Length: 166
Image (cartoon, rainbow, N blue to C red; front, top):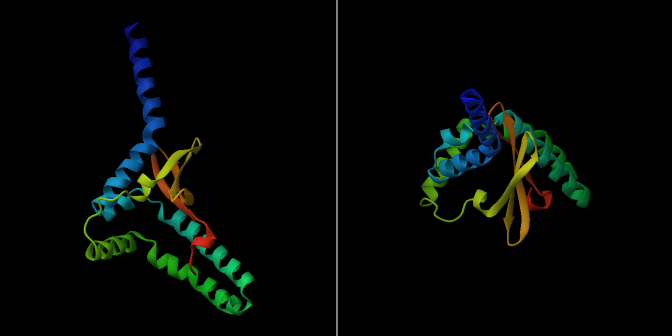
């Protein structure tokens, strides 16, 4: 009888952690960003997946701009070829450290709500968690997290192409 109760309690704890784990990850990310701890942020990022997500979005935005403006078509084609190199160079743990260090030099620690505080979060599937960023009543973008084992990693950032000034 005691074994069944113990097994039931352990199963309940495991399921509770399994369900709550993306919110725990968001809490850790929020704290790391507020404390400007790039290494703590980096541990929650799948950089190869994030790079691919950003490359795809930047190329899509450039293509949409080129379709609207014939004069920028040639420039967009050139810029698209440079996108891979640009993203590969910047979206790295070192790039994150440099970005956060530059932000720290420009401003005092933030007490205002972070991006994670301005949104809503929910499961999209068993292994995908989405944070939708809201500003002035509009969706501004989404941060995608995928389950990797028992932890969660940022694998993508989706931004409306019209929000990108490329």
